[in-house]
Amino acid sequence: MRYYLPALAALLFWSCTAQAVETYAERLGWPTGSRVLILHVDDAGMSAESNAGTISAVEDGAANSFSVMMPTPWVPQIVEYIEKNPDADAGLHLTLNAEWAHYRWGPLAGKPMVPGLVDRQGAMWHNVADVVEHASPEEVAAEIAAQLERALTMGFQPTHLDSHMGTLFATPEFLAAYMQLGIENDIPIMFPGGHNFHARQLYGERAGGEALAAGKMLWQAGLPVLDDLHNTSYGWARGDKVPNYVAAIRALKPGVTMMIMHCTGPAAHFNLISGSGPSRVGDLEAMLSPDVKQALVDENIIMTTWRELHTRRKAVEE
Image (tube, rainbow, N blue to C red; front, side):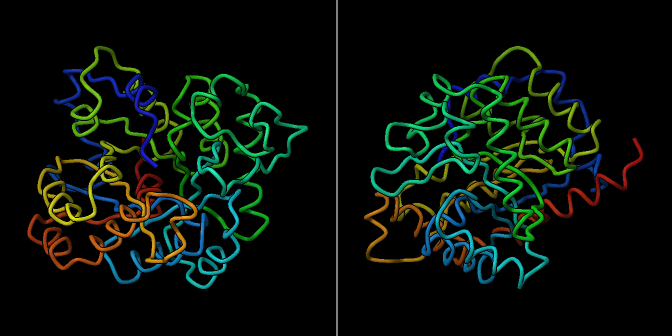
């Protein structure tokens, strides 16, 4: 699901001085000018089709990382896959929304603890704005902690944390809870705190340095930081996915970039969950495409994972 644009736009400020600063890729030990990429699949655990698409994208395709929605129904299946594949780069897609009409889930912390995260159906709110209106930062912190706890209870140690629908970027207080969870548990979090070249093309240039400051804070806490975030593929038509991914790969700037997608295996009944099936199948087709794989080779893109980023950050003496 595409990130909540007004919220993320408020965080992705641009500072002209950032262009002269070394990238986080360089600080992590890659040569100057290196273009380092994570091809990341969101929404694992949401459905059987989501799991099938995720596994296919990382085993047979170009994708190399994914994250799991812990409150959703098909988590046991994807966690079983992770147990059998301990080197998988698998994180938590921290979830505060249940956006579909009839396929829904509730908070793991339970309604008595987090009533502001629950709508009249007893599920999480459909949209980000309702979470902002009804939930307190304390409730958000409790719920994302419960999602991490469930993962650990299942024997699943996540390589990273990120945010479903960008809800954790919606307010400074939500962002603080997200950052705190990562810092306290020594788990990298998805946050673009570098030059944000692509992000600023998408969200517009702003004055100030809040994103840079947050990135610096994460780095000083011993966690790796992204230079940029690419999050436009959800809106691409299925037939445009392959050429658009190729163009996006060619346009990557130096630094560590995370490119987000949603891969779903073809299934006739996925349309009962969401109308986004064609786009998600298109993402899977793109990851399996020889053209996309060849573009990575032709452009000398260095593929990495959150697991590797964390290991490299630990090796940096700062």
